[in-house]
Length: 636
Image (tube, rainbow, N blue to C red; front, side, top):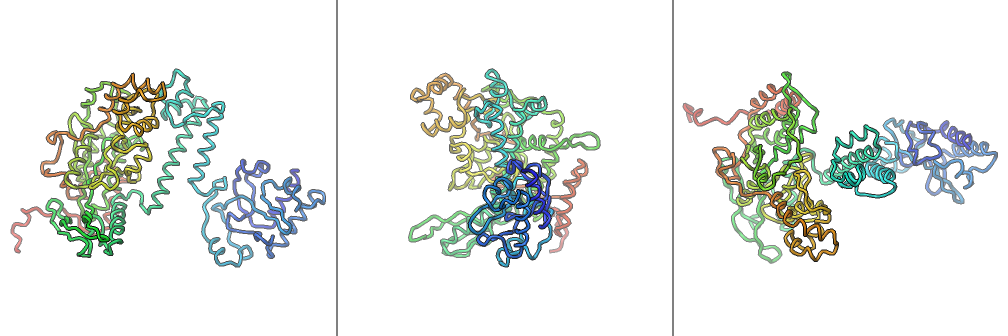
């Protein structure tokens, strides 16, 4: 009964050292009223009160006897070690009953209020003692210290709650159409279920909308934590694009040289092998950048008796940034900020922080990276002529964002980044055109964007030169394998998939009744979108077959909309006057005074402080290189 439980717990509390901890009621259905009580340390916290084989340890035998006596008196002289009474009195404390021992294993974890270690509670085992000295994470109330596991459990719990509210009928919570059907009924399948709609419905008392809103938030947190864990396993650093890129190139060089007995020196453009038998490199001056790059001299090498082409050293990739998309991302991610005169600067602040995290470390070394910002020209483009409803579902640009586009361009000039746009084309088309030109010149390309349309440009593994995407949040690299894992098709078939399944962000409806998974199955089965349309009469599912046959003309139109135009006329691009080739598109010399003056004018204190800290930590004088006229009169 309850009084017996209280006596047993009180007896335990009186003898051992304790800590405050919140217990999970789902794990302790009987003792949930002791939510904020003090409980002893157990095995999970680093202390082991009982040996696995010999029962209670000698240094606390008297404590065991005291507990047992208290339990015996509490249950009218019944033996505490009996299975029946233990199950009745101590359901929260896991016990095992054998001929010679029973275990006391409270399922708890330590909190940050950990009491000092006690010598009598430490086994005379060097390995165990060392393990106990490792600090443990703070308790989250569910006996789980792993953040990823905790989020996974919370997602499962929220998913079961949603299904329970839907009369135990399961549906795809990640599908906007199925969520709309649950919230609005059969007639509301095309209703929006974005964050604002769910939040408004939840505040009005709709429990289903509140649970879906929370489920989506947990899903985002889970994906973010999963990325962090994967990044930590790889040894990459957050917001260190060039540092992680150097590690990647060094790893590739080490992997190649390990089989040939040659050790690479440095990484990136400076990865030159010391073994002459491996490959001969010729150093060529780069007049535009003021640096030296390495171009290989054609010379075959012998690997295991087979003639092989020499490995091309990794040159610095051309980094193309989807500036327009990042401006919107910054606008919605950062709270509204304003200058003292009322000028909005929230999106500008986020954009400058991104550029500083990305470039400042290299700029401090005096480098001039290959970086280009691609902008939308504004107004209608050629896709509106093909399909007037293209992006018609998007509202007008927020009023407080409009003046920030010009400020972002000023910030890019202060950094010295090349800016490119083309009238009548989107930033995606500019990026596709520059990517094609760079590949023709033998330069790798990294695209900093989260736009799925640009995944069509990613090259398969082993392709030289190569194209990757970089996540703008954590600078994680997105490879061809990641595209297949996410969409189920290769990058060159992603346009076919988007034409079939549609793209709600661009108001491309696709084929009714076909989502991304079904589209991937059809494309993998028949080979391409055209073959799917040609052999649609062979599809077994009647609704799927009829839907494709009825919308075959529209699908071909949608395919034109999702395709990237990689042949924008060069005279339409706003390239710098000194442009010669894509491989020579580099930042201008960094002038910290110019950037500091811009920050002062925009009142971006955080960005300015970050810049000043870097400047103070670096003794290099960042004065711009002298012009030829400044050499006049110098005797040498």
